[in-house]
Length: 86
Image (cartoon, rainbow, N blue to C red):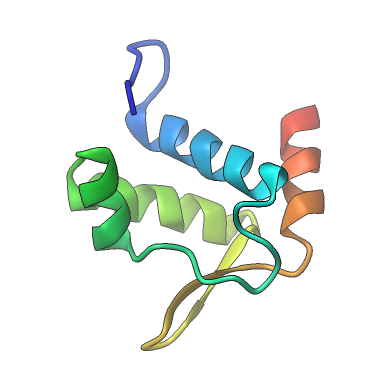
């Protein structure tokens, strides 16, 4: 992924996950890559990926199953669409 200087990297990563959810790459209750996997996949620091996942969890787009990883919330698509309208 190529990042721009217009927006913080963690926000650009969140936008990418939003796009993947809207495109159906990740559906409700699907497991998404771990923080470390996603950081390596995009070539960013793990702390940046943590910020992205924390943002998405606060917005209700993903949730954490302790010891299992992060999953897409059942109403994630609606949450993403609502976020995009803002």
